[in-house]
Image 1: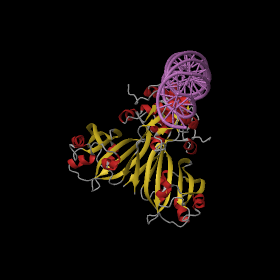
Image 2: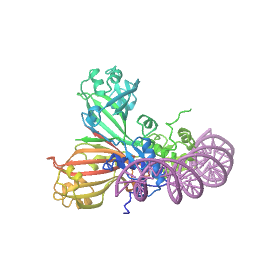
Image 3: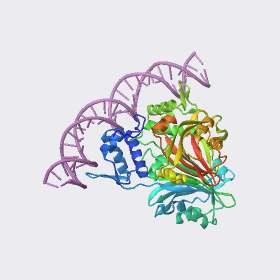
Image 4: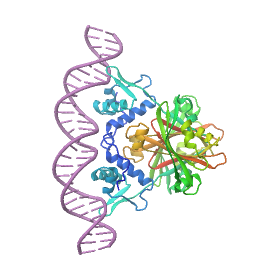
Length: 246
Length: 246
DNA sequence: CCAAAATGTCTATTGATATAGACAACTATA
DNA sequence: TATAGTTGTCTATATCAATAGACATTTTGG
Protein backbone atom coordinates (compact mmCIF):
# COMPACT_ATOMS: atom_id res chain seq x y z
CA UNK A 1 0.00 0.00 0.00
CA UNK A 2 1.24 3.46 -0.79
CA UNK A 3 -1.02 5.11 1.76
CA UNK A 4 0.90 8.04 3.20
CA UNK A 5 0.32 10.53 5.98
CA UNK A 6 -0.11 14.17 5.08
CA UNK A 7 3.56 14.86 4.59
CA UNK A 8 5.58 16.67 7.19
CA UNK A 9 7.15 19.95 6.13
CA UNK A 10 10.82 20.52 5.74
CA UNK A 11 12.95 23.52 6.47
CA UNK A 12 10.35 25.59 8.21
CA UNK A 13 12.06 26.05 11.51
CA UNK A 14 10.28 23.06 12.98
CA UNK A 15 12.43 19.94 12.94
CA UNK A 16 10.91 16.89 11.31
CA UNK A 17 11.37 14.81 14.44
CA UNK A 18 9.33 17.33 16.43
CA UNK A 19 6.52 17.47 13.89
CA UNK A 20 6.40 13.70 13.89
CA UNK A 21 6.47 13.55 17.69
CA UNK A 22 3.53 15.96 17.80
CA UNK A 23 1.59 13.90 15.31
CA UNK A 24 2.22 10.62 17.09
CA UNK A 25 1.36 12.19 20.44
CA UNK A 26 -2.02 13.35 19.24
CA UNK A 27 -2.64 10.08 17.41
CA UNK A 28 -2.11 8.36 20.74
CA UNK A 29 -4.39 10.85 22.47
CA UNK A 30 -7.14 10.20 19.95
CA UNK A 31 -6.94 6.48 20.59
CA UNK A 32 -5.53 5.51 17.22
CA UNK A 33 -3.34 2.72 18.55
CA UNK A 34 -5.64 1.47 21.27
CA UNK A 35 -6.01 -2.00 19.79
CA UNK A 36 -2.38 -2.91 20.09
CA UNK A 37 -1.31 -0.59 22.89
CA UNK A 38 1.79 -0.03 20.79
CA UNK A 39 3.00 2.52 18.30
CA UNK A 40 3.62 1.05 14.82
CA UNK A 41 7.18 -0.16 14.16
CA UNK A 42 9.77 2.49 13.41
CA UNK A 43 10.16 1.36 9.82
CA UNK A 44 6.42 1.61 9.25
CA UNK A 45 6.26 5.10 10.73
CA UNK A 46 9.26 6.16 8.68
CA UNK A 47 7.47 5.02 5.53
CA UNK A 48 4.22 6.71 6.56
CA UNK A 49 5.89 10.04 7.19
CA UNK A 50 8.32 9.69 4.32
CA UNK A 51 11.44 10.11 6.48
CA UNK A 52 14.40 8.11 7.59
CA UNK A 53 14.02 5.64 10.42
CA UNK A 54 16.50 7.63 12.53
CA UNK A 55 14.25 10.65 12.31
CA UNK A 56 11.35 8.63 13.65
CA UNK A 57 13.61 7.38 16.42
CA UNK A 58 14.32 10.98 17.45
CA UNK A 59 10.59 11.61 17.63
CA UNK A 60 9.95 8.50 19.70
CA UNK A 61 12.86 9.36 21.97
CA UNK A 62 11.22 12.72 22.67
CA UNK A 63 7.92 11.02 23.49
CA UNK A 64 9.73 8.55 25.73
CA UNK A 65 11.32 11.51 27.50
CA UNK A 66 7.82 12.86 28.12
CA UNK A 67 6.80 9.52 29.57
CA UNK A 68 4.22 8.85 26.88
CA UNK A 69 5.84 5.78 25.33
CA UNK A 70 8.52 3.30 26.23
CA UNK A 71 10.52 1.40 23.65
CA UNK A 72 11.32 -2.25 24.40
CA UNK A 73 13.89 -3.92 22.25
CA UNK A 74 12.42 -6.75 20.25
CA UNK A 75 8.83 -6.03 21.25
CA UNK A 76 8.03 -2.54 20.06
CA UNK A 77 7.24 0.88 21.48
CA UNK A 78 4.59 0.64 24.15
CA UNK A 79 2.11 3.39 24.98
CA UNK A 80 2.28 4.32 28.64
CA UNK A 81 -0.33 7.04 28.87
CA UNK A 82 -2.87 8.83 26.75
CA UNK A 83 -5.09 11.46 28.19
CA UNK A 84 -7.20 14.34 27.20
CA UNK A 85 -9.40 15.76 29.93
CA UNK A 86 -12.67 17.35 28.97
CA UNK A 87 -13.58 20.65 30.59
CA UNK A 88 -17.18 21.76 30.44
CA UNK A 89 -17.53 25.55 30.35
CA UNK A 90 -20.85 26.90 31.51
CA UNK A 91 -22.36 29.28 34.03
CA UNK A 92 -21.45 26.76 36.68
CA UNK A 93 -17.90 26.07 35.55
CA UNK A 94 -15.80 24.72 38.39
CA UNK A 95 -12.43 23.18 37.91
CA UNK A 96 -12.66 20.24 40.26
CA UNK A 97 -16.26 19.37 39.54
CA UNK A 98 -15.64 19.84 35.85
CA UNK A 99 -13.02 17.16 35.76
CA UNK A 100 -15.44 15.01 37.70
CA UNK A 101 -14.44 11.37 37.60
CA UNK A 102 -12.03 11.85 34.71
CA UNK A 103 -9.27 11.84 37.29
CA UNK A 104 -9.05 10.23 40.68
CA UNK A 105 -6.74 12.69 42.37
CA UNK A 106 -7.33 16.40 41.94
CA UNK A 107 -4.94 18.94 43.41
CA UNK A 108 -4.77 22.70 43.52
CA UNK A 109 -1.41 24.14 44.57
CA UNK A 110 -0.84 27.72 45.60
CA UNK A 111 2.43 28.74 43.99
CA UNK A 112 2.42 32.37 45.12
CA UNK A 113 0.15 35.12 46.28
CA UNK A 114 0.42 38.86 46.63
CA UNK A 115 -1.58 42.02 46.93
CA UNK A 116 -1.41 44.55 44.17
CA UNK A 117 -3.16 47.53 42.63
CA UNK A 118 -5.62 47.05 39.78
CA UNK A 119 -4.31 47.97 36.36
CA UNK A 120 -6.69 49.59 33.88
CA UNK A 121 -7.46 46.25 32.26
CA UNK A 122 -8.08 44.42 35.54
CA UNK A 123 -10.13 47.28 36.93
CA UNK A 124 -12.37 47.30 33.89
CA UNK A 125 -12.93 43.57 34.01
CA UNK A 126 -13.70 43.51 37.73
CA UNK A 127 -15.66 46.77 37.59
CA UNK A 128 -13.46 48.45 40.16
CA UNK A 129 -11.63 51.77 40.17
CA UNK A 130 -8.11 51.71 38.75
CA UNK A 131 -5.68 51.16 41.59
CA UNK A 132 -8.14 49.20 43.75
CA UNK A 133 -6.45 46.60 45.93
CA UNK A 134 -6.48 43.09 44.51
CA UNK A 135 -5.30 39.74 45.79
CA UNK A 136 -3.40 37.80 43.18
CA UNK A 137 -3.06 34.03 43.35
CA UNK A 138 -0.76 31.93 41.20
CA UNK A 139 -2.01 28.39 41.16
CA UNK A 140 -1.14 25.08 39.59
CA UNK A 141 -3.84 22.48 39.12
CA UNK A 142 -3.15 18.81 38.74
CA UNK A 143 -5.17 15.74 37.93
CA UNK A 144 -3.72 12.38 38.91
CA UNK A 145 -0.46 14.16 39.69
CA UNK A 146 -0.10 15.49 36.15
CA UNK A 147 -0.07 19.27 35.86
CA UNK A 148 -3.08 20.37 33.84
CA UNK A 149 -3.19 24.13 34.10
CA UNK A 150 -1.55 27.07 35.73
CA UNK A 151 -3.57 30.13 36.50
CA UNK A 152 -3.29 33.68 37.74
CA UNK A 153 -6.42 34.86 39.52
CA UNK A 154 -7.34 38.28 40.91
CA UNK A 155 -9.91 38.99 43.62
CA UNK A 156 -11.07 42.26 45.21
CA UNK A 157 -8.86 42.42 48.31
CA UNK A 158 -11.30 44.04 50.70
CA UNK A 159 -14.10 41.60 50.08
CA UNK A 160 -12.05 38.41 50.05
CA UNK A 161 -9.27 38.92 52.59
CA UNK A 162 -7.76 35.59 53.52
CA UNK A 163 -8.65 33.83 50.29
CA UNK A 164 -5.00 32.95 49.66
CA UNK A 165 -4.82 30.94 52.87
CA UNK A 166 -8.20 29.42 52.19
CA UNK A 167 -7.02 28.28 48.77
CA UNK A 168 -3.77 26.93 50.11
CA UNK A 169 -5.69 24.85 52.65
CA UNK A 170 -8.41 23.57 50.36
CA UNK A 171 -6.82 23.53 46.93
CA UNK A 172 -10.14 24.67 45.49
CA UNK A 173 -11.44 28.05 44.41
CA UNK A 174 -14.99 27.05 45.22
CA UNK A 175 -14.02 26.01 48.74
CA UNK A 176 -11.88 29.11 49.21
CA UNK A 177 -14.76 31.37 48.20
CA UNK A 178 -17.03 29.53 50.62
CA UNK A 179 -14.48 29.98 53.40
CA UNK A 180 -14.44 33.75 52.97
CA UNK A 181 -18.22 34.08 52.79
CA UNK A 182 -19.24 33.49 49.18
CA UNK A 183 -21.17 30.23 48.94
CA UNK A 184 -21.95 30.51 45.23
CA UNK A 185 -20.72 32.17 42.06
CA UNK A 186 -21.24 31.94 38.32
CA UNK A 187 -19.06 32.14 35.23
CA UNK A 188 -19.88 35.32 33.33
CA UNK A 189 -17.59 35.04 30.36
CA UNK A 190 -14.66 33.03 29.04
CA UNK A 191 -12.23 34.00 26.32
CA UNK A 192 -10.16 31.27 24.72
CA UNK A 193 -7.00 31.62 22.67
CA UNK A 194 -4.13 29.32 21.79
CA UNK A 195 -0.43 30.13 21.76
CA UNK A 196 2.88 28.36 21.86
CA UNK A 197 4.08 27.42 25.32
CA UNK A 198 6.52 29.86 26.87
CA UNK A 199 9.34 28.96 29.20
CA UNK A 200 7.25 29.07 32.34
CA UNK A 201 4.68 26.79 30.72
CA UNK A 202 7.36 24.33 29.77
CA UNK A 203 8.55 23.96 33.32
CA UNK A 204 5.34 24.26 35.31
CA UNK A 205 3.14 22.23 32.97
CA UNK A 206 5.99 19.85 32.17
CA UNK A 207 5.61 20.37 28.45
CA UNK A 208 8.04 19.87 25.65
CA UNK A 209 9.11 22.83 23.53
CA UNK A 210 6.78 23.73 20.70
CA UNK A 211 3.77 22.50 22.67
CA UNK A 212 0.51 24.39 22.47
CA UNK A 213 -1.13 26.12 25.40
CA UNK A 214 -4.83 26.96 25.55
CA UNK A 215 -5.32 30.25 27.37
CA UNK A 216 -8.62 31.12 29.00
CA UNK A 217 -9.54 34.49 30.47
CA UNK A 218 -12.51 33.98 32.74
CA UNK A 219 -14.71 36.30 34.75
CA UNK A 220 -16.71 34.99 37.69
CA UNK A 221 -19.40 36.93 39.51
CA UNK A 222 -21.53 36.46 42.59
CA UNK A 223 -25.25 35.66 42.19
CA UNK A 224 -25.99 39.39 42.01
CA UNK A 225 -23.69 39.79 39.06
CA UNK A 226 -20.90 41.58 40.92
CA UNK A 227 -17.51 40.42 39.60
CA UNK A 228 -15.60 38.43 42.20
CA UNK A 229 -12.73 36.90 40.25
CA UNK A 230 -10.83 37.34 37.02
CA UNK A 231 -8.51 34.53 36.06
CA UNK A 232 -6.07 33.81 33.25
CA UNK A 233 -5.44 30.06 32.97
CA UNK A 234 -3.05 28.17 30.76
CA UNK A 235 -3.85 24.56 29.85
CA UNK A 236 -1.76 21.99 28.02
CA UNK A 237 -3.60 21.59 24.73
CA UNK A 238 -2.53 17.98 24.55
CA UNK A 239 -4.14 17.26 27.89
CA UNK A 240 -7.48 19.03 27.64
CA UNK A 241 -10.33 20.08 25.47
CA UNK A 242 -13.14 22.47 26.32
CA UNK A 243 -16.81 21.86 25.85
CA UNK A 244 -19.39 24.63 25.82
CA UNK A 245 -22.95 23.49 26.37
CA UNK A 246 -25.49 26.12 25.50
CA UNK B 1 18.87 47.73 31.24
CA UNK B 2 19.24 43.99 31.47
CA UNK B 3 15.54 43.37 31.09
CA UNK B 4 15.19 40.18 29.10
CA UNK B 5 12.33 38.25 27.55
CA UNK B 6 11.61 34.79 28.84
CA UNK B 7 14.43 33.14 26.95
CA UNK B 8 13.78 31.09 23.87
CA UNK B 9 14.72 27.43 24.05
CA UNK B 10 17.51 25.85 22.14
CA UNK B 11 17.87 22.47 20.53
CA UNK B 12 14.32 21.33 20.96
CA UNK B 13 13.36 20.78 17.40
CA UNK B 14 11.96 24.27 17.03
CA UNK B 15 14.42 26.67 15.44
CA UNK B 16 15.13 29.84 17.37
CA UNK B 17 14.11 32.04 14.45
CA UNK B 18 10.69 30.37 14.39
CA UNK B 19 10.14 30.73 18.13
CA UNK B 20 11.07 34.38 17.86
CA UNK B 21 8.84 34.89 14.83
CA UNK B 22 5.93 33.39 16.76
CA UNK B 23 6.57 35.63 19.73
CA UNK B 24 6.85 38.79 17.67
CA UNK B 25 3.73 37.86 15.71
CA UNK B 26 1.67 37.53 18.83
CA UNK B 27 3.21 40.65 20.36
CA UNK B 28 2.05 42.52 17.27
CA UNK B 29 -1.39 40.92 17.54
CA UNK B 30 -1.71 42.02 21.15
CA UNK B 31 -0.92 45.61 20.20
CA UNK B 32 2.45 45.79 21.89
CA UNK B 33 4.05 48.01 19.26
CA UNK B 34 1.00 50.12 18.45
CA UNK B 35 2.61 53.38 19.54
CA UNK B 36 5.37 53.30 16.98
CA UNK B 37 3.81 51.09 14.34
CA UNK B 38 7.22 49.49 14.12
CA UNK B 39 8.93 46.45 15.53
CA UNK B 40 11.93 47.34 17.74
CA UNK B 41 15.31 47.46 15.98
CA UNK B 42 16.95 44.13 15.21
CA UNK B 43 19.74 44.75 17.70
CA UNK B 44 17.24 45.43 20.46
CA UNK B 45 15.26 42.32 19.69
CA UNK B 46 18.45 40.27 19.54
CA UNK B 47 19.35 41.51 23.02
CA UNK B 48 15.84 40.87 24.35
CA UNK B 49 15.78 37.30 23.12
CA UNK B 50 19.43 36.67 23.84
CA UNK B 51 20.33 35.69 20.30
CA UNK B 52 22.41 36.93 17.42
CA UNK B 53 21.05 39.68 15.23
CA UNK B 54 21.09 37.35 12.22
CA UNK B 55 18.71 35.01 14.01
CA UNK B 56 16.28 37.87 14.58
CA UNK B 57 16.61 38.74 10.92
CA UNK B 58 15.53 35.23 9.98
CA UNK B 59 12.47 35.63 12.18
CA UNK B 60 11.58 39.01 10.68
CA UNK B 61 12.11 37.63 7.17
CA UNK B 62 9.54 34.93 7.94
CA UNK B 63 7.06 37.54 9.19
CA UNK B 64 7.71 39.66 6.09
CA UNK B 65 6.97 36.58 3.98
CA UNK B 66 3.63 36.31 5.79
CA UNK B 67 2.92 39.94 4.97
CA UNK B 68 2.83 40.99 8.61
CA UNK B 69 5.84 43.31 8.58
CA UNK B 70 7.97 45.06 6.00
CA UNK B 71 11.57 46.07 6.61
CA UNK B 72 12.69 49.43 5.23
CA UNK B 73 16.38 50.09 5.18
CA UNK B 74 17.30 53.00 7.36
CA UNK B 75 13.84 53.36 8.91
CA UNK B 76 13.01 50.14 10.63
CA UNK B 77 10.60 47.25 10.30
CA UNK B 78 7.05 48.46 9.82
CA UNK B 79 3.96 46.59 10.93
CA UNK B 80 1.57 46.03 8.03
CA UNK B 81 -1.25 44.16 9.69
CA UNK B 82 -2.36 42.91 13.07
CA UNK B 83 -5.63 41.23 13.57
CA UNK B 84 -7.40 39.00 15.97
CA UNK B 85 -11.08 38.57 15.39
CA UNK B 86 -13.31 37.85 18.36
CA UNK B 87 -15.89 35.10 18.02
CA UNK B 88 -18.70 35.02 20.51
CA UNK B 89 -19.95 31.49 21.19
CA UNK B 90 -23.46 31.21 22.52
CA UNK B 91 -26.81 29.59 21.79
CA UNK B 92 -27.14 32.02 18.93
CA UNK B 93 -23.67 31.62 17.47
CA UNK B 94 -23.58 32.63 13.82
CA UNK B 95 -20.38 33.12 11.92
CA UNK B 96 -21.24 36.24 9.95
CA UNK B 97 -23.15 37.99 12.71
CA UNK B 98 -20.48 36.98 15.20
CA UNK B 99 -17.81 38.84 13.35
CA UNK B 100 -20.21 41.75 13.17
CA UNK B 101 -18.42 44.94 12.27
CA UNK B 102 -14.96 43.54 13.00
CA UNK B 103 -14.58 43.05 9.28
CA UNK B 104 -16.14 44.88 6.38
CA UNK B 105 -16.17 42.06 3.86
CA UNK B 106 -17.35 38.63 4.93
CA UNK B 107 -17.25 35.70 2.55
CA UNK B 108 -18.23 32.06 2.73
CA UNK B 109 -16.88 29.88 -0.07
CA UNK B 110 -18.10 26.41 -0.85
CA UNK B 111 -14.99 24.37 -1.59
CA UNK B 112 -16.69 21.03 -2.09
CA UNK B 113 -19.83 19.11 -1.25
CA UNK B 114 -20.88 15.50 -1.33
CA UNK B 115 -23.39 13.06 0.02
CA UNK B 116 -22.21 10.31 2.28
CA UNK B 117 -23.31 7.78 4.86
CA UNK B 118 -23.16 8.64 8.55
CA UNK B 119 -20.29 7.04 10.44
CA UNK B 120 -20.88 5.89 14.01
CA UNK B 121 -19.52 9.16 15.40
CA UNK B 122 -21.54 11.40 13.09
CA UNK B 123 -24.68 9.35 13.60
CA UNK B 124 -24.38 9.64 17.37
CA UNK B 125 -23.84 13.39 17.23
CA UNK B 126 -26.74 14.01 14.87
CA UNK B 127 -28.97 11.42 16.56
CA UNK B 128 -29.46 9.47 13.36
CA UNK B 129 -29.04 5.78 12.53
CA UNK B 130 -25.58 4.73 11.38
CA UNK B 131 -25.48 4.88 7.61
CA UNK B 132 -28.08 7.65 7.31
CA UNK B 133 -27.52 9.89 4.30
CA UNK B 134 -25.68 13.12 5.08
CA UNK B 135 -24.73 16.13 3.00
CA UNK B 136 -21.16 17.20 3.61
CA UNK B 137 -19.98 20.75 2.89
CA UNK B 138 -16.39 21.90 2.87
CA UNK B 139 -16.30 25.63 3.35
CA UNK B 140 -13.76 28.40 3.66
CA UNK B 141 -14.72 31.57 5.49
CA UNK B 142 -12.97 34.85 4.96
CA UNK B 143 -13.07 38.27 6.57
CA UNK B 144 -11.72 41.17 4.59
CA UNK B 145 -10.34 38.68 2.09
CA UNK B 146 -8.20 36.93 4.70
CA UNK B 147 -9.04 33.28 5.28
CA UNK B 148 -10.25 32.85 8.84
CA UNK B 149 -11.52 29.31 9.08
CA UNK B 150 -12.17 26.23 7.08
CA UNK B 151 -14.95 23.92 8.08
CA UNK B 152 -16.51 20.58 7.31
CA UNK B 153 -20.24 20.50 8.05
CA UNK B 154 -22.70 17.60 7.90
CA UNK B 155 -26.49 17.89 7.52
CA UNK B 156 -29.24 15.24 7.35
CA UNK B 157 -29.64 14.80 3.59
CA UNK B 158 -33.37 14.13 3.47
CA UNK B 159 -34.31 17.18 5.47
CA UNK B 160 -31.94 19.68 3.87
CA UNK B 161 -31.70 18.69 0.22
CA UNK B 162 -30.27 21.55 -1.79
CA UNK B 163 -28.41 23.17 1.09
CA UNK B 164 -25.11 22.95 -0.81
CA UNK B 165 -26.46 25.13 -3.59
CA UNK B 166 -28.07 27.45 -1.09
CA UNK B 167 -24.74 27.88 0.68
CA UNK B 168 -22.87 28.40 -2.54
CA UNK B 169 -25.29 31.16 -3.48
CA UNK B 170 -25.47 32.92 -0.13
CA UNK B 171 -22.12 32.18 1.50
CA UNK B 172 -23.93 31.85 4.81
CA UNK B 173 -25.13 28.85 6.78
CA UNK B 174 -27.94 30.86 8.31
CA UNK B 175 -29.18 31.96 4.88
CA UNK B 176 -28.77 28.44 3.49
CA UNK B 177 -30.83 26.98 6.31
CA UNK B 178 -33.51 29.59 5.71
CA UNK B 179 -33.55 28.75 1.99
CA UNK B 180 -34.26 25.10 2.70
CA UNK B 181 -36.97 25.78 5.23
CA UNK B 182 -35.26 26.26 8.60
CA UNK B 183 -35.63 29.88 9.67
CA UNK B 184 -33.94 29.46 13.04
CA UNK B 185 -31.50 27.20 14.87
CA UNK B 186 -29.43 27.20 18.04
CA UNK B 187 -25.97 26.10 19.04
CA UNK B 188 -26.21 23.10 21.33
CA UNK B 189 -22.59 22.45 22.15
CA UNK B 190 -19.08 23.43 21.11
CA UNK B 191 -15.87 21.56 21.76
CA UNK B 192 -12.60 23.45 21.43
CA UNK B 193 -9.12 22.03 21.03
CA UNK B 194 -5.84 23.36 19.66
CA UNK B 195 -3.34 21.58 17.44
CA UNK B 196 -0.51 22.39 15.10
CA UNK B 197 -1.57 23.29 11.60
CA UNK B 198 -1.44 20.44 9.12
CA UNK B 199 -0.59 20.74 5.45
CA UNK B 200 -4.13 21.54 4.36
CA UNK B 201 -4.36 24.26 6.99
CA UNK B 202 -1.14 25.80 5.78
CA UNK B 203 -2.43 26.20 2.26
CA UNK B 204 -6.10 26.96 2.80
CA UNK B 205 -5.67 29.28 5.78
CA UNK B 206 -2.44 30.69 4.37
CA UNK B 207 -0.50 29.93 7.52
CA UNK B 208 3.17 29.44 8.09
CA UNK B 209 4.50 26.13 9.35
CA UNK B 210 4.32 25.68 13.10
CA UNK B 211 1.22 27.83 13.34
CA UNK B 212 -1.55 26.88 15.73
CA UNK B 213 -5.06 25.96 14.68
CA UNK B 214 -8.07 26.18 16.98
CA UNK B 215 -10.47 23.35 16.23
CA UNK B 216 -14.15 23.58 17.15
CA UNK B 217 -16.68 20.78 16.92
CA UNK B 218 -20.12 22.31 17.01
CA UNK B 219 -23.60 20.88 17.09
CA UNK B 220 -26.57 22.99 15.97
CA UNK B 221 -30.22 22.04 16.46
CA UNK B 222 -33.59 23.38 15.40
CA UNK B 223 -35.79 25.12 17.99
CA UNK B 224 -37.23 21.73 18.98
CA UNK B 225 -33.79 20.42 19.82
CA UNK B 226 -33.46 18.14 16.81
CA UNK B 227 -29.84 18.19 15.55
CA UNK B 228 -29.56 19.85 12.15
CA UNK B 229 -25.82 20.33 11.67
CA UNK B 230 -22.53 19.06 13.00
CA UNK B 231 -19.46 21.02 11.99
CA UNK B 232 -15.72 20.76 12.53
CA UNK B 233 -14.05 24.13 11.98
CA UNK B 234 -10.39 25.07 11.98
CA UNK B 235 -9.41 28.65 12.83
CA UNK B 236 -6.04 30.35 12.65
CA UNK B 237 -5.18 30.89 16.31
CA UNK B 238 -3.31 34.05 15.41
CA UNK B 239 -6.39 35.51 13.80
CA UNK B 240 -9.15 34.70 16.26
CA UNK B 241 -10.15 34.25 19.84
CA UNK B 242 -13.36 32.81 21.20
CA UNK B 243 -15.58 34.37 23.81
CA UNK B 244 -18.18 32.43 25.74
CA UNK B 245 -20.81 34.56 27.42
CA UNK B 246 -22.83 32.64 29.96
C1' DC C 1 15.90 -23.80 18.36
C1' DC C 2 15.57 -20.92 14.50
C1' DA C 3 13.82 -17.17 11.97
C1' DA C 4 11.26 -13.06 11.76
C1' DA C 5 10.41 -8.77 13.68
C1' DA C 6 11.61 -5.28 16.53
C1' DT C 7 14.67 -1.83 18.80
C1' DG C 8 19.78 -0.36 19.81
C1' DT C 9 24.23 1.40 18.25
C1' DC C 10 27.76 2.95 15.27
C1' DT C 11 30.04 5.56 11.25
C1' DA C 12 29.78 8.92 7.63
C1' DT C 13 27.89 12.73 4.89
C1' DT C 14 24.99 16.69 3.70
C1' DG C 15 22.30 20.73 4.49
C1' DA C 16 19.97 23.81 7.92
C1' DT C 17 20.62 26.58 12.06
C1' DA C 18 23.13 29.87 14.83
C1' DT C 19 26.98 32.77 16.02
C1' DA C 20 30.50 36.33 15.01
C1' DG C 21 32.34 40.29 12.88
C1' DA C 22 32.81 43.78 9.40
C1' DC C 23 31.09 47.03 6.44
C1' DA C 24 27.75 48.98 2.93
C1' DA C 25 23.40 51.49 2.13
C1' DC C 26 19.68 54.09 3.46
C1' DT C 27 16.75 57.36 6.58
C1' DA C 28 15.81 60.83 9.77
C1' DT C 29 17.26 64.55 12.40
C1' DA C 30 20.03 67.85 14.86
C1' DT D 1 25.36 68.29 5.87
C1' DA D 2 27.22 65.49 9.15
C1' DT D 3 25.89 61.87 12.18
C1' DA D 4 23.43 58.48 14.65
C1' DG D 5 20.39 54.84 13.93
C1' DT D 6 18.78 51.29 11.19
C1' DT D 7 18.51 47.53 7.67
C1' DG D 8 21.27 44.88 3.90
C1' DT D 9 25.09 41.90 2.59
C1' DC D 10 29.14 39.22 2.87
C1' DT D 11 32.52 35.74 4.90
C1' DA D 12 33.66 32.23 8.18
C1' DT D 13 32.87 28.71 11.67
C1' DA D 14 30.53 25.40 14.83
C1' DT D 15 26.60 22.68 15.98
C1' DC D 16 22.10 20.54 15.01
C1' DA D 17 19.04 17.92 11.91
C1' DA D 18 18.41 14.40 8.53
C1' DT D 19 19.82 10.74 5.54
C1' DA D 20 22.18 6.33 4.54
C1' DG D 21 23.83 1.87 5.53
C1' DA D 22 25.47 -1.86 8.38
C1' DC D 23 25.11 -4.81 12.08
C1' DA D 24 24.10 -6.04 17.11
C1' DT D 25 20.61 -7.28 20.50
C1' DT D 26 16.23 -8.70 22.19
C1' DT D 27 11.58 -10.71 21.89
C1' DT D 28 8.06 -13.48 19.84
C1' DG D 29 6.23 -17.35 17.52
C1' DG D 30 6.42 -21.37 14.56
